[in-house]
Length: 300
Image (tube, helix red, strand yellow):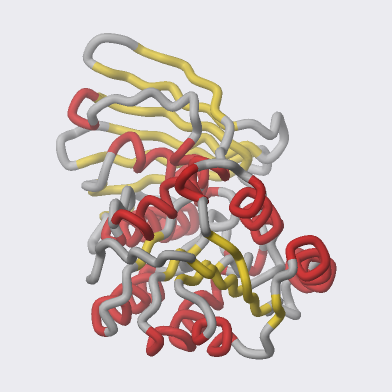
């Protein structure tokens, strides 16, 4: 799939999906931050969207859309295609992962670079189809959770990691599957540390939370403890050849956007689509394991 430098002198960003607080947060950072990578980058057009059967989507979209136009001068477009036609790069931020494939299909013929917010998709079939279309139309594609860019996360080579234990909130939204709503953040963090190559997944679930264990091809293990009744914070314990480290973490929208802009301006992609596909497959296997009460092999 095409990846490279897209040196737009003045980059106009389009957003598809204004039903997430990320639309406001990302626009505010891009417009108000003095970061060099955000220079000459402006969110200029957006398609509001919204999923009628998803209360957290449909009850917020009009409020967020109104603020986008009033506070940042973003033009609302009646179609996704018009957003793609009038901008240089597109952020698909719809909070409903079920519709990302159809949204991508609607704009892929414009061949603009696309960032897709979490969750990338709710099945490996949808995720694989998005990636296939991106390859067919030569579209640069990226997706990542802001937790991958937590500033407290230490820099270490994946080869030094023996294992990792992630914890974080695990709220469940019925329209988004059991693990894809909040589990996506913890899974992205786990893969940021462990890298690709998970071979099997086992998940257990109670009313209080979930425990997901992944075994990597070298025998390394990583776990996710999802908490439904407890503190709303993220963290990780790293097991390396030299030390065990317990690190509380905060997601960083600014660092995520710096990575996205570095990708758009300089062609540096920090999360390859193949790893994104593996993360989705990991959560899919975790859901299957939870229901069948057995270990599931990660067949890609």
